[in-house]
Structures are given as structure tokens and as C-alpha cells.
Length: 109
Length: 231
Image (cartoon, rainbow over all chains, first blue to last red; front, side, top):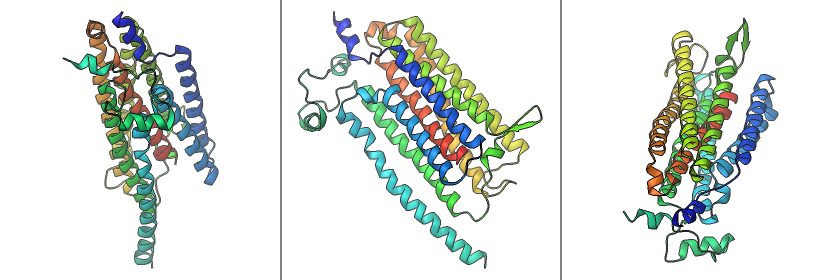
């Protein structure tokens, strides 16, 4: 009795769901590989790479890691803190540009 | 151990949903996350690991922006010669597919674990570990090729910006260490599943917790693949 109850606590989803996600991840990886294979350049390349990357990451976290079925309190606790990283990325991008300009102005006169 | 009573603190049937649920989960005088404590701790560990890998990738972005030398073209650096033809990023693509496949087998292992199918859970976990080991093997091959044939060092390389080597070894090395640790971790848990440890304990949540770690390793590779190899 206790075991039967316990069994329902864990995540239970049909195997076909995982196979579908697996297939989707394969397709998305192939598409991002093709971006490189066909030498797409510029904003089109970067947009496609980022879109495929975020879609794959979303599928892995939501389905494989079962985040989609967790309570909102856990989702927030885990998914909101990484947003701070956007600040770090923004600052480091600005700093990188500044370093490049300094180097160009100082060393390549 | 009183672990069992704690870990199965299920969500009350009347638990509020949505934002109201967040407030009541965090403010009520009870356990904040209605999941096994091991699972909550694994998530928090993975959150900290997210920050570590993000720091590496941000550092890579910073040095790549700021260098005046040309960045080596990963598409050419990681090309493989097949029948006299150069196929860009072939090995990396294969490694990506292997890691995704291992994530798929792991997800199914978790599922069979909760169905108390010991044989299938063990087999799928061992398959996951084997795929992970082959990933590490290919990475070793790639590193050897880069160090011995291409002359890439952490401080210099013949193709362009010196920062390429340090970024590459740092990022893929740390990821490879995670995969290696995961292979050992999964093998140990698979052995315990096979011995029936979790059958006696009455809970297969450890399989799901190990799965979380493994999916995270795959998740990090998604970002490395996109930002380092494809950019």
C-alpha cells in the first residue's frame, strides 16, 4: 500500500514523450549543424544559432529534467537567479569592446 | 533514518496553484519545496554549476571580443578529413548526437525506475554511462589532435588569437570532467539499482536525481556547441 502511494510521488510519463523530445533534439541539432555546414553568416547565423540553442535547452530542462511538472516555487528558485547572468554578460561585452578600442588606439597606430 | 518520512512530503491536495502557490509555499511554516530533499539539493548544485559554466563562457566572449588578432575559425579547426574531403565539425556533431542520445536513455531509465523495472533501469543507465564514456573518448581524441597535430597550446596557436587555446581547454576540459564524473556516478547508481538497494528503500528518486545531473551535462554542451563551435 505504502509502496503504491510512493510510486505516484515520482514523475510518470509515457515513454513516447521522451522519444518525441529525443527526435526533436536530433532535428534541432542537425539544423544548427547545417547553419555551419552551409556557411550562413552575419545576423542570420547568430539568430539561428541562438534560437536553436534556446529551444534545445528549453526542451531538456522542461521535459527531460521534469521542470514543466514542478511547482512554480521551485521553478522560480532555479530559473530566475540565472537571469543575473544577463547583467554580467552585458557588462563584459561592454568591457570587451572598450578593451578592443584601447588596444587598437594604443598598439596599432 | 527519518529520511523517508521527510522525502515523501507530498503536495497537499488543496495546495494553491500559480503565484498564490509560490507565496504559500515560501511563507508557510513548512518545507518550501515539496520534492525529496536530495532532488532540491541537486537542483541547487546545478544552479551553482550554471554560474560556473556561465563565467567561463562569458570570459570566452570577453577575450574573443577584445582580441585584435583573428579568431581561429572553429569550422576549419575542428574539421575531419573523410576520403580526402574536409567535413566541418563532423566529430563535434557526432559528439552532440551521442550526448543527446545518452540524455534520452537516461530519461527513460528514470521512467522505468519509477515503474520499478530494475532490469531495464540498470540497462538504460549503463547505456547512458557507455555513451558518456564514448563522448569522453572522442574528446580525448580531439584534444590529442589539437595538441599534437595542430600545435594548439593554452598560450598560443598557429591559427590566430592566443586566447583560443585557453578558452578551449578551460571550457571543454571542465565539461569533460563533468561527463567523466557523471559516468562514474551513473555506474555506481546503476549497480545499486541492480542490487535492489532502492527496492528495499521503496524509492527510486536517486535515479531521477542522477538523471538531473546527467541532463545538465547535456544542457551545458548545448551552450558550448552553439557558442564555442558554431559562433
